[in-house]
Amino acid sequence: MARKAGTVDEDLIPANSQHRYQVCERDLPLSCPMPGMYLWNSHPKVFLPIEETGEAKCPYCGAHYQLGID
Image (cartoon, rainbow, N blue to C red; front, side, top):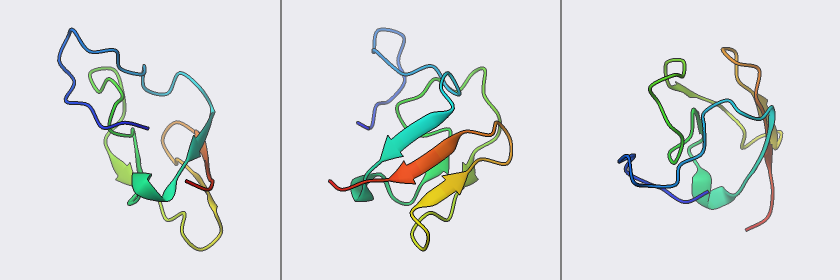
């Protein structure tokens, strides 16, 4: 997932629009919502421990993250 600043003219991902996200090691440390997502309609940022098990679930929105290979 590319890091973006969040200006209006950028093509960002709507936060919490999906329930499953594939992330890579370059996305660590993992937070929900992730960089590259609109933040105005989302929950507070929370960091998710995904390194040990390869999976994490956001306690706010229930989004499921799975760690893949870069």
